[in-house]
Image (cartoon, rainbow, N blue to C red; front, side, top):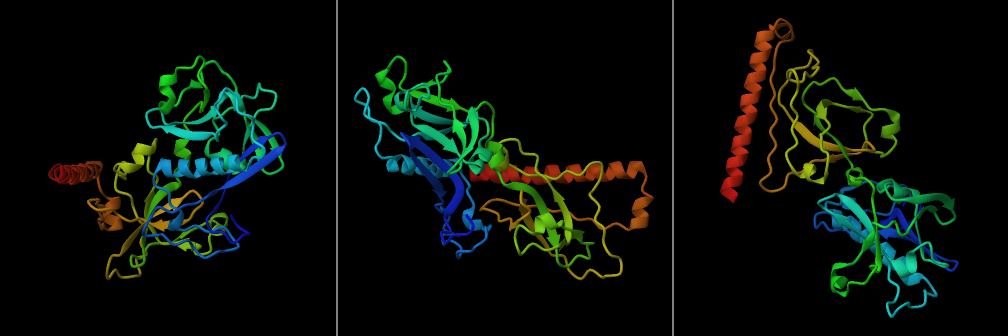
Length: 333
C-alpha cells in the first residue's frame, strides 16, 4: 500500500462481520525468495520490485488464508458453539485439475439463511483477482465492496479430507466454487521484450500513462522485438515460450548512418502495468535468439520462392534446437 511505512502491507483485504463487529485485514506479504529476502525501503508511493514476486499459487493462497485467520481471531465475541463444533475461519483452496478456486465455510455459522451469520466481504482489489464468485455489490465502509453469497445451492456441500470419515448428512461445510477460471488473471506478465544499447534500433515511444507508473521507465525504448506469450493456463507459463514470425522473420528498423561494432541484447518481461523486469534463467534453462542481417534493397527484391526457402531454413533450425533440448532433458532423467 502507498501512504504508509509497512513495505509488506498489501492492497488486498478480507473482511468478516458478526453481530455488528467488522474486522478487516489486509494481506501481509511474506517473501519466499533468498535472492530478494529484504523488503524495499518504505516509500510513500506504490513500488514494484522483484521482492514481491510470487511464483506458486499456494503462496498467494497462504497470504489470503492468513488474512482470513487474523480477521476471524479479532472477532469479539464469536458465535456460540453449535453441535459441539466451534466456529472456524473460512479458507480458500485451489484445484489444479479444474483450475478453480473455492472458499470453504462452515454451514452452521456462515450460511446467510441464518438469523445472524458471519459475513464475508471482499474489497475491489481482491475481487479483481477472483470475480467469479456469487456476490452482492455493496460498496460499504471499511472496503466491504462485495458480499460473498454463502448459501445452500444444493451442489456445494463439502467435507474436508481430515473429517471425511464422519459422513454427516448433509456435510458440515459449503464449498463456494468459482463459476469459471480466473487464475490466469493472476499472472502479471504481458510480453517479452528484447532491448539493445548497441544496435542502432529506431526507438519506440512509450505512452505517458505507462511511464507514470514507475519512475525508472524510459519514455523511449530501443526495442529490437517483442511478443506476447500465448499462454492459456498456469502450466503454460512453465513451458517453452517461442516467437515464430509468420510469414517471415520479424524486421527491425535500423538507422543506416550508425555503424555496428558489437551486439548486446537484454531480455525483459513487461507486466500489465508497463513495468520492466530482467528475465533470469534457472539452471538447465536456455534461451536462443537468431539474428540475420539483410540488405534492405536485396530483401525487397526477394521472390516468394526465396522467402519460403528462408522459412524452411528457420523451421529446420527450430527443430534442431528442440532436439538438443529434448536430448538434454533425457540425459538429466
